[in-house]
Image 1 (cartoon, rainbow, N blue to C red):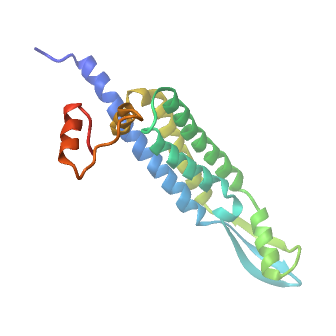
Image 2 (cartoon, rainbow, N blue to C red; image 1 turned 90 degrees about the vertical axis):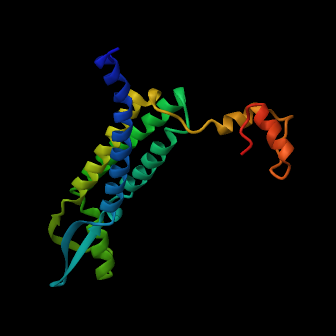
Image 3 (cartoon, rainbow, N blue to C red; image 1 turned 30 degrees about the vertical axis):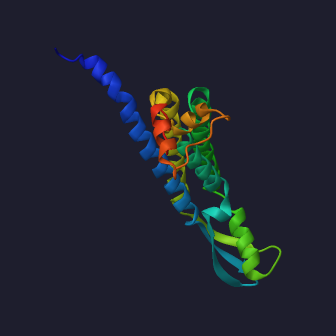
Length: 202
């Protein structure tokens, strides 16, 4: 009996989407977090004819991309802990975290406020002019990480209902009911009774 190619393709699509979402989400969060520690802007602080180089890291420019990356990473893990409507909600949080990280990174790509703050701190003055401002490519890498998080969220929204959930051990424990105590591991007879009832004694 030949297998229907269409049904085979339909059954493997959710598994491929699962792998792609995990890889995309984890990679995206890592890229955003790594980018936050890199230099996003460089300039010269000039006061009274003296010039000193100043830099601003991604975390100094904006802490939002890192925070959203952590939220997205948590949502990626939580996708497998919930089902049905809860999974849709968590997948939406994952997608929105990616979109927010993209926006924050792009806004920070041309930011000079962090450089001015660093210049004022370096010079010991409330205000210090910055000249020769330049920006690195790290904000764009951060935006790329946000895009990967967004893709993971969209995959979860599209295929998440067909993905497996965490083990049902806790559901079995809940079905045991409040009036039925968990088997004592030091009493073999309790373990055998639990097995006879179809429960997982572990």
